[in-house]
Length: 257
Image 1 (spheres, rainbow, N blue to C red):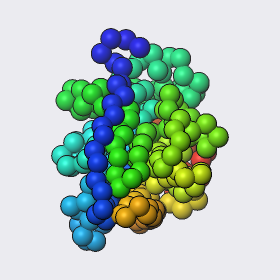
Image 2: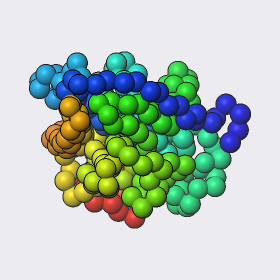
Image 3: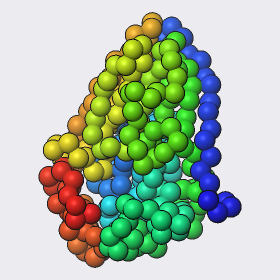
């Protein structure tokens, strides 16, 4: 990568024991401001606004509100903000030129449109994101990452987990919720807040609870104003919007995008 464009992996080791702890995890916002606002409103309405929130990346692309979403995210006192592959595409031109994901010329045009919408400060914020957050809580190692270790474009593979023991692997990227036990470890994916792809078009996020050595996972679905998100894509003439609109409404991936 070019100098100044490398996203650094950082691990933090914080120990909490014996107390019931909640963690809110959200991923793959994809420039969807109505979904993000619905998420914040849900936290306030359900007494969750004081709980630690962890964002797992992909704040931009595939939506009409990249600058607004990054600005709102930056204002929110989250515990951590990780980078995803789409955030990397925005800050690194080579990621567009050499990535098969953007084999479609429309995809490259869309990504450059997104970059043009972002303020200098918001681009700088994206450049400073880390790719991993790791800590210890109630006997579990919590390992948060966007995709899998070593790649933000691939899915965490249960047959090749990097650690043994009691580990909670928390990841995003697929836009599909996942709760899987692998030996004494767990893999949890909260789904996508801004662009679900599991045939349920409601915004999706997760709640993890640990305490006294136990752990539980919940996926929360929130209805939001999808047509507002769709109308903004039309009003702003966002490149590549036809496929994006279809998947927002159906929560099914389309090869138009």
